[in-house]
Length: 78
Image (cartoon, rainbow, N blue to C red; front, side):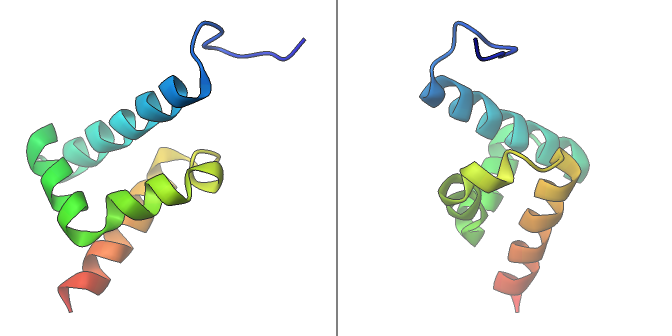
């Protein structure tokens, strides 16, 4: 039997939950609202990146994921 801390959630539900948690943690790290944070990471392409690479990104700490987002945002700003 496979262990899961969210046994009643399917794969898509888990991905959505994780993505929303990333947005929330990014918002807190930047002292922004979740809407502002989502708009910022969407505009920079960071959201597309973390969604596309979810299979790897979700294994990292949230701090590492935020660092990836910050790196993409910085690259897009130049």
